[in-house]
Length: 140
Image 1: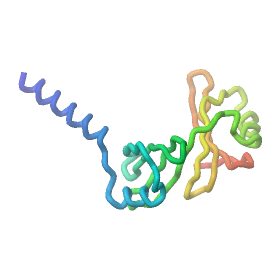
Image 2: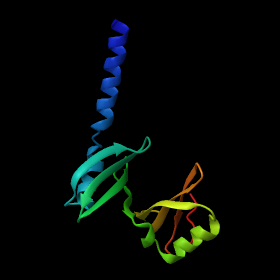
Image 3: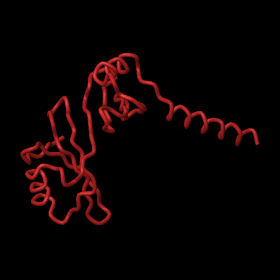
Image 4: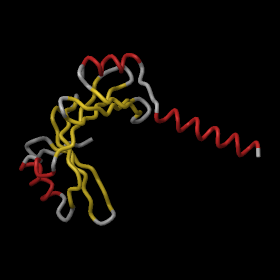
């Protein structure tokens, strides 16, 4: 019985910690500097060295990622599939014939500038692709 209670207590502790994450002070400060009027901010970890905030900003729902050192990495906004640039849609149709776009995002990145990401599905297979506005693929 003690073993079951101990295991249950550990599970509850892990769950509570995963939903109430607070980033390091430098990450928090970098976020507040970049998104001064953000509301409804929720933090989580994305990998071992990256923090992700989901929040409302200027009437939009966004997510932003920061490195452990506070460096901004990217800001992502979900967009309508129809709002993908024509060159991006054309590149997806050409390179991924038979695949269906299920979701689209416009992402401002520190590495590539503005890119467009699309979640694709073909049968039970899923993948994510990214392109510059002119249809040039982003290779990671």
